[in-house]
Image 1 (cartoon, rainbow, N blue to C red):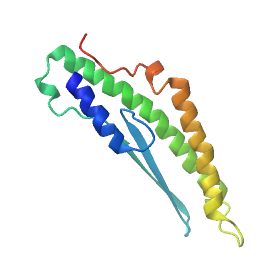
Image 2 (cartoon, rainbow, N blue to C red):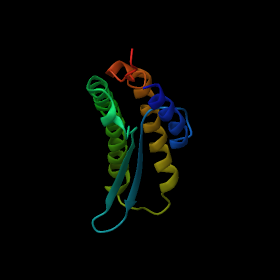
Image 3 (cartoon, rainbow, N blue to C red):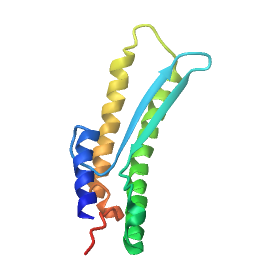
Length: 140
């Protein structure tokens, strides 16, 4: 398990540039004016994968699976905030339609900043999932 932990730590630094976490949820909103207007939301999870987990003892496999499930639960919370952000963009802009003089990009950035604060608060309140049971299964 120490080797698995080391691998996660090494690779998580490459996954994102704002600290080391075991998983991350990325999202991208792509509003498109049209008839009808649509907001496409792409959400991607970056989760650890232990390729050789089937070679571990059954009790370790079970702990690993529980860890992954709790980690996914935590990341699903981030996904919900991302989806709420997309709905805010849709409500504020797509439903209203384009208007002359509207500062679309700066307005979208303001919404992103608002929901980014919610993401940080979610991590603060859950202690990055620890209060939701996310705990790496060290072999004690």
